[in-house]
Length: 221
Ligand SMILES: [Zn+2]
Image 1 (cartoon, rainbow, N blue to C red):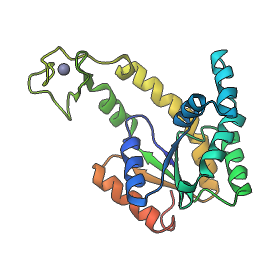
Image 2 (cartoon, helix red, strand yellow; image 1 turned 90 degrees about the vertical axis):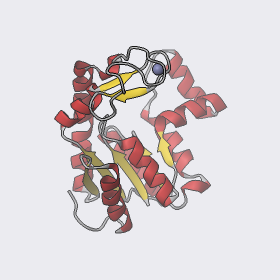
Image 3 (cartoon, rainbow, N blue to C red; image 1 turned 60 degrees about the vertical axis):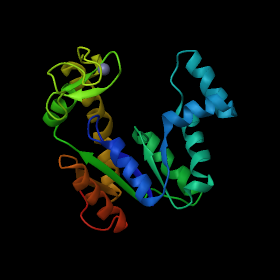
């Protein structure tokens, strides 16, 4: 089962990707990780990516697609894989589909975790971090024992810049802008499934498992 997973920041996408990896025994493919390891391993694509990045440029779709092709052709992807963070654009999606077609594979399912943006803003902007030991808290969901202080070391907790409300709103609108067209693209192909990411982790896991177990047959979004 080859799955593409979409989810905005704060949707719990990482947790759910890990669940799919463990339950179905298929690897999670992240283009960021692939790029880093190709650069480190000095493969031809890695070297090409490095010279672009060193020059301050964006790695081209051709390089990323080349990495995806190498990765999904590996042994551990035989019974499937889960793609996270890719594709981000319609040209990438087009290229991905034809690349997979060329090696006898296809995208079976696209699962989109949908969470109301107000809830995401609450989740993300409520995060607090200990600058001394790195432990994370949440002002509603994971309160420290003493307000504003780290449980481990008593240091005053801070809000990371990434979690400030304005940054969160900006991150969410970038995500929305990137994915709304992609979601309609996959919807038109009949393989988009939306899961409400508002429930408990285990609720969301059951919804995802039901979709995958049915091979994608069932309620499409
Ligand atoms: Zn601490």
